[in-house]
Image 1 (cartoon, one colour):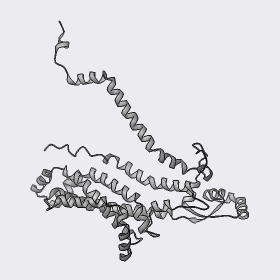
Image 2 (tube, rainbow, N blue to C red; image 1 turned 90 degrees about the vertical axis):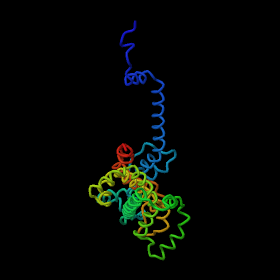
Image 3 (cartoon, rainbow, N blue to C red; image 1 turned 45 degrees about the vertical axis):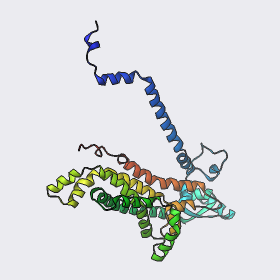
Image 4 (tube, rainbow, N blue to C red; image 1 turned 120 degrees about the vertical axis):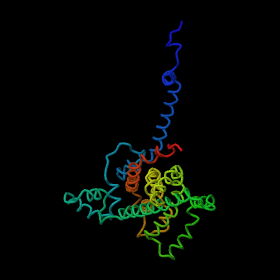
Amino acid sequence: MPSFEETGPRNPVNESIRVDKASPRARFFRGVRAALVILVTLVMLIPVFVMGITAFKSRSDVVSVPPKLFFEPTLEGFVFLLTERSQLAQAALEEAKANADELGIFDRIALNAGQRINGPSDFSRRLLNSLIIAGGSTVFSVTLGLFAAYAFSRFDIAGKGDLLFFILSTRMLPAVVVAVPLFLMFRQLGLHDSHVGMILLYTVFNLSLTTWLLKGFIDEIPVEYEEAAMVDGYSRWQSFFKIVLPQATTGIAATTVFAMIFAWNEYAFALLLTSENARTAPPAIATMLGRGGIEWSAIAAGTLAFLIPVIIIVFALRRHLLRGVTFGAIRQ
């Protein structure tokens, strides 16, 4: 007769473990999915890899055919990015090379390319403009979007669905459609080529995104928490700041990343509505020509420098990009 171990009640946990261990087909498909994810990731990172190695190539290595994967790295691209230079005549070049030991590293690198450094370039100022405009517009759009999302989530507003659709429709508008009217309006209002004008513009365009994203997060915070706080004597503002705001931290962080990336990468409005004072890094990198030809290593170096702040921000907020366990995990 079969023993008690064979006829007794089955443990579902042990059963699932035995089934999982005995299903090589399932493990095979999991391995295939993981391999596909890794392959797609590597393919998507190819342009980033090419950009990274191009930033450290010399001018001759950049244009070599076939492309070089192994080369002697140089800071030539960063020197061309951060400095303004002029081409030296042969006599002046030979004289400068004779005194090369007295020059700094940037001057020697420029000298090897037959050029002399006249002063710093404006790329640092363009990058600072990007930080000011993207940072300012992100703060305003997330703050205004948070209050708007709370109002749409907690109060009965007449025509709420139509208003939400109208807000979202501004996101669907192609930039080229409103480019000329915005240019004329900015000229009339004195906002052309100003930090205030670009911050206002990016705030308006980001407001629909932040409102919709934050409304989804606030909807998942039980309203009973606020009601209980107000029964205990809290005002509406106090319940918002002490109950809702801490619970919505994950959503605010994720929304901040998306709004920051849009304002940081925006190109069309930055090219059309700025010229000198408020010009940001994207159009400055794209219009970089150099001396005697396009300096691809300098463009790659500028793109790499432009990418680093976004990587730092996303890495710092990586835990908040996915919805936290608090959202949707509270029993009603």
